[in-house]
Structure formats: C-alpha cells, structure tokens
Image (cartoon, rainbow, N blue to C red):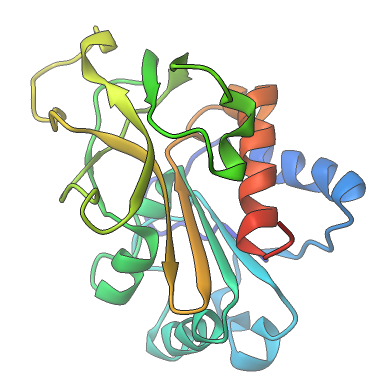
Length: 220
C-alpha cells in the first residue's frame, strides 16, 4: 500500500515516487495499490497488504477509526516504510510518531549535502556498501527529538556540508536521517530521501528504498 495523502505541504515529487514504485513493482513482483483516500483505511482493506509505504504524506490525514485500523495492521506484524515527509505527519498521534521514529521540526533550504554512512550492514544500505559518505541534493530534515536512543541509526547528516541556511534552527549536532526499528512483530524503516524528483531517479536511492520495502515486508 502506498499512501500519500497531504493536508499540509504537498511535495511535487510524490508523482515521481509513485512512478519509481510502479517501475520497481514489475521486477520485484509487487502488487501496488496507491491511494490518498483515507476512508479506505479499514481492517478489511489493510488485510490485503504486507507493507504500507507512507510517501510524503503531511499533517493530519487519518481519523481515529482509521488510526485504529492502522495500529491493528502494524500489530499484525505488517511492515512500514516512511519516506521523507512521513515525519511531517500525524503530530497528534504519538503512536505514529514512535512508529516513524521522529517528527519533523524544520529544515534548511534544499541543497547538496553529505550523509555519513554509520552502518552499511542493514540490507537497505547495500547501495552504500563500503562508502563512508554519500553526497546528494535533498531537503535535510531536523527532528523535534533525536531518535537515536530509540531506533537503529544507519546514516546521519554531516551538518558541516550544509552551506545554505538562514539560521541555525535546523542544527541538531547529532543528526540521524536514516534508521530502522522493530515494533513488536513489525518492521519499520525511515529514510529522509525523497524531497526532489531527482531523488526517485537516483539509482542508489531507488535501490535503497526498494530493499527497505522488501525488508519491511519480510521478503529478506
């Protein structure tokens, strides 16, 4: 399931993310349903899926009954992959914040910067295997709380490579941007990539997201 409903900022790159996922589905033998219709989020509907990919949703997109259905979906051991603005979503639903790992706070202007590869042993880090850093253009989120103590961090932002900023509000010092965790029997993965159209055309990022989805769905 690919869910990309927005009630706040809408990323133009959602269309590129959907195209990337549909292109991958052919070789990966995924059956994808993409929707922004939150009324579909029921126990019966969710039972069809192994993984929910939250592709740049924003703000308050699910009501209480839909939230309960999604909590049951994860409680049944199904997977979750949060892409970029999944962190800018459902601030009044603490359970979701724990599932995603952190909530968005702010960001400097989108720009080229470098992430530090902290751990390349997770399957989804295969594209970065043996690399100490990776430099690309994206929008580098800062989070309201540092998730490091609660998740398994795979990469963090090298803040010294961010050259365009209006202030220092975005700085965290220790700045995780990619992580995974297990929530009961469920697997959860978050990646900061996905602000730009280009992110979904970057072969390394595409492979990274592809493997994350297969991992969350317990195909790996």
